[in-house]
Length: 230
Image 1: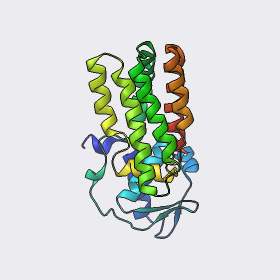
Image 2: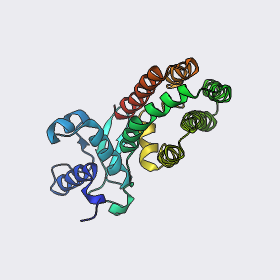
Image 3: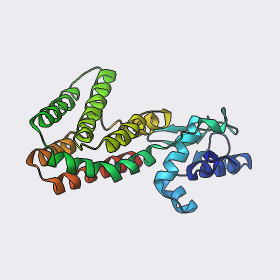
Image 4: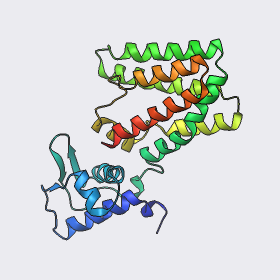
């Protein structure tokens, strides 16, 4: 068995596929809500959410916001290889570990150039909310978000940390699973959900308060996890 097939969310998805094959769910049936499945299977809602999106990606299920998750096929359209190497929640978990420290170091190295760059990013985020064209609104907000966090990482003055963060950020907000989970959460970045979070981070970095900068960055990443998971 490959490493990919051992992933917990794929294990849950495969269990549901087996239940469909055994006629526990018929075509057109609604799969139980995520909260109920999480309780039944003894896993987190995060894992269930990933499993449901994976089932949709392989053509087994159709996630209809506000209605439920419906069985539309009994066998996958594609092979197991569609599974991403890392899931959105694993990426966010890694960000939660590293980015608070990067924010703290940025507060200690809060040069005028850094403050100006972060300020410009926030202005981009605020402006993007008012764009009428959806694609432009989403792309501008995502670009501003990435530039904001990249600027903070670059201020740590540690080439290895910068390299690690660059690799990590290249995975963030990318791939079919991330895009679908973001869509199910009503695209929080595109609707300006994180502007206030970024302002709080900016304010603490500008003040040079490294401990507070770590705290607000930790809270921000936690907020993203909670928004995507529920």
